[in-house]
Picture (cartoon, rainbow, N blue to C red):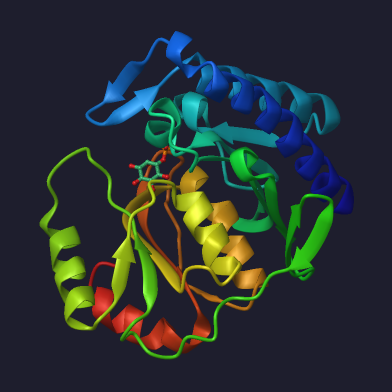
Length: 262
Ligand code: LIP
């Protein structure tokens, strides 16, 4: 597992450099729509192909599930790399430096490794099961711990929602969080918001429909940083599922507040 862990961190840095180069030349990118509010460009595809190629060379027997080629995926989430080449694509294309490369390794549908790289801020968030969660930045490595926040009143929570279709469930959850005094933000990238929960910068993150490549690596970071995560189990590669990760002391209150959606 340690070989895979070391490889995933180095690969995230390599892929992040290619993505950052595209980000700095984003005006030249041709933007396509995969669906309502769902953007893609050659940057997403190129970065995914690089990651896939490198993993296939290093670990030829491992499976691969990537956002841009998810339709090709068959089989179980076991000995499988799960990749979002650019999470926060809308931010990326609009020049907002809140996006990341997300790489996870899954065995028996449980993430063993989670790596989230924010190239714009040189922050590599990473965790291996049982090894804690860490952030490498500017040559330093820091252990991560979720926040000690113990009440919803004044809690700082990422509240993601997609722009694909109106969904009253989101309004219901936001209304209840407002009533509980929660300060909400949607920064537009699930994996990076979960990494910030692991780092104690956010007290929680909730999104009701997320794909496995957006969430599974970030959830592993939250768990290894001592946080709570609700069960996240999409039954098929392209299914979406509700995602909740947060500081342990506010878990019960957030679970109660997000019923029956999470
Ligand atoms: C994005 C997620 C975000 C969600 C967006 C989109 P992408 O992933 O990170 O939380 O609200 O709808 O799914 O498409 O940028 O990889």
